[in-house]
Length: 152
DNA sequence: GCCAACGTTGGC
DNA sequence: GCCAACGTTGGC
Image (cartoon, rainbow, N blue to C red):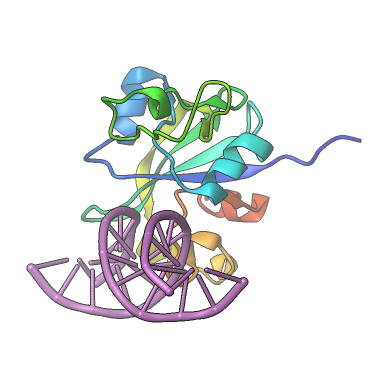
């Protein structure tokens, strides 16, 4: 049976990595996610080609600034093995990695961002994980409807 | 810079 | 296995 398509949202602080950086790079390894729920999404559910909303957080106007897509299957995050990396995890070994990631590829930058403010006011997005109280997930799933609203 | 909300850690 | 303390996230 055909698996239903999945839609995603990833957060990034634009001062660290923005949609413009992704546009320039075309593709990037989504390193540094150190949250088990987010890891599980990447490791277990993301598939190459899945559409991704690119969200800017901790910036003057938080919101969705672009579209990306999943560009690889999951593989171990190399930064967990690197003692010089801020994401180094001494408990991880190459035989037993802890953290996984996928590659994310640029699709497009939105001419106008869909701001957090706009999303909060859209009744169709009431159940969106992003808008739930206190949510801090950096990788989250979306329904097709939630993905499509930001396209209109 | 503040602070609420959350996840993780570690003592017991 | 509980739960208080702590660190981090992220909007404002």
